[in-house]
Length: 144
Image (cartoon, rainbow, N blue to C red; front, side, top):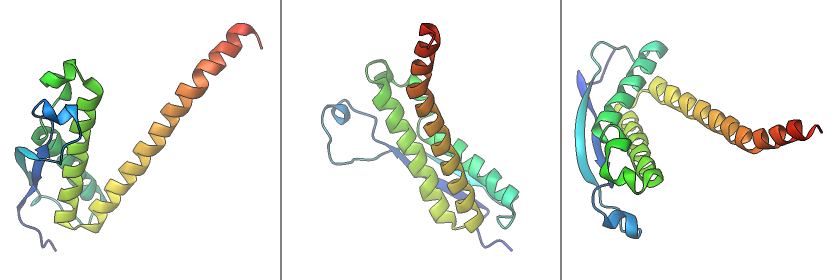
């Protein structure tokens, strides 16, 4: 039982990266459409958790393409790498969220929430290693 269209757009994805004024001061958000990518749904049963996860992967890939691909290839990356990566990532996250809301499949939303929890846990582990790792190395080198 699928009440979804055979192909649903991932979303009209926008990126506020273009233009040097976007970096100098926080302007009112002006979204510029970078791309629109259609994601195939007709081969998936969104009542099946594995298919919901497959769709989530497709949405993430579509968001990557629609939001400009590799942020490191954008001109602004040379002068503002952290900001460039942040803008690209925000575009992708927002695009996936909008697509999930548009599709309205509970298992898809659940798969996305699980991914977000895992990403948060992984970030916390990395942050902990950054804080504790140098201290542990210093202790082992000093013999205490």
